[in-house]
Length: 348
Image (cartoon, rainbow, N blue to C red; front, side, top):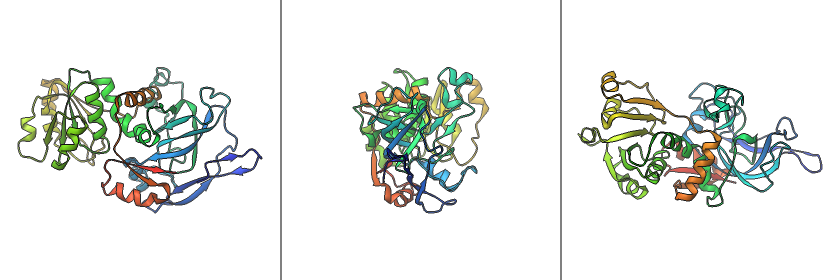
């Protein structure tokens, strides 16, 4: 794909090349669009995309599962590439610099959350592929506040999935756990295999909960001290009162009462995977054990920068499969069938 967009040096209009769905579940087809306005805005950065990770959120948006997708729809919000142009007010970026862009690409900049560096909970947030065209493309433009430098010790294929999958699990772990804790990770998949690595790198004792016994060896290789087969009768009961913090990374419905029972008194259950049904929780363990349940979105730009630097220093890397961008439909089918081990990355 031609990475250029907007106006070239001769003043000629050049369009962004992308892959878009025309409707819910429709195959992605070649698509081109002209950025508006054609000239780069002062606060924007233009990125030539080298890699874009695939996320299950892309599947939900592609299918319009949440009811707000606009078509034609270009998925992709785990973007790595190089700066081709920086606006006059984006002074910290230079041409050729490796950068990343994740799920969020805009916020109001004025509310109490934005003012204290919590842009990820701004009520006026803008999503990279929900308020514009995403990263299954040759290039993209974004507000420079949400463009993150990629550390030298992290290659772009590894960095791309961290910009959503990585920060989704890093944020609650970094904000809620400390090295003396015992952490449970539910699911050893696209999110869970990263959560295991981060929790171990934080110095925690890590228990991996999975319904796939064949993942035990890999979970231990990634840093799990214990592996609990959640399908095995009595396994969750035996794990009662064993974790200070549990993070659920799966999109399946769980026995939430059983996982509350896994928590110690004052323990916390964090939900980052979106289950199919509403959570049904017994009140008694919440009251008697002072336990709590909460969710967590992606992190702020400052936390994403911290996460990338931490990952580079500690060797926290996603397990990836690479597909050429032109084979996007094949890659989407593999992701939808839950066959990816563990993150798929498209490469231009």
